[in-house]
Length: 143
Ligand SMILES: CC(C)(COP(=O)(O)OP(=O)(O)OC[C@H]1O[C@@H](n2cnc3c(N)ncnc32)[C@H](O)[C@@H]1OP(=O)(O)O)[C@@H](O)C(=O)NCCC(=O)NCCS
Image (cartoon, rainbow, N blue to C red):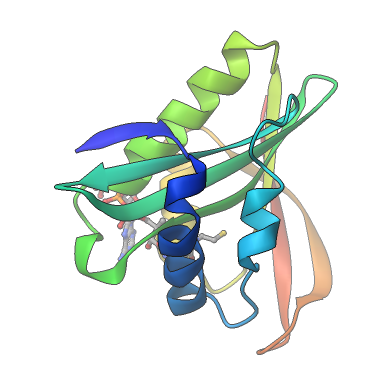
């Protein structure tokens, strides 16, 4: 399994995975916007030529927002999500990232457990932040 920067050739695969994993998915153009960006980036996990996961980060003057992480359903539970998160944290740190934050659906136990295992802690909630279905967001930080 290879973790590398997303390229233009990956856009269809990443956007397809996104629409399988989320009820209000980002569009292909949203991922396209991340290419050649100084403060934002996307890394993908590739296995035997197939894109099986991705992570997106946005560096805002040293505060890094992890805005997307996902793994294809058939590939979950094999540490790919953890490796993607670790790669994004390392990459963001190497360009000056100091503190990390993210939002997660309150019911998303798998993701919350992954984030906690990396040292993220809950620092707040956003009421009814998500739609389809409506749900609170938990805000987590790694400081
Ligand atoms: C969250 C997600 C990215 C995890 O990816 P993954 O590759 O399956 O996770 P990993 O195999 O790397 O697991 C890492 C840790 O996450 C936690 N975890 C993963 N799946 C879990 C599950 N089903 N239940 C509870 N904890 C789980 C565990 O702490 C695990 O550590 P362990 O292996 O030492 O037990 C994946 O479930 C996913 O893509 N979900 C759909 C999209 C999504 O919800 N993204 C997050 C949006 S905020």
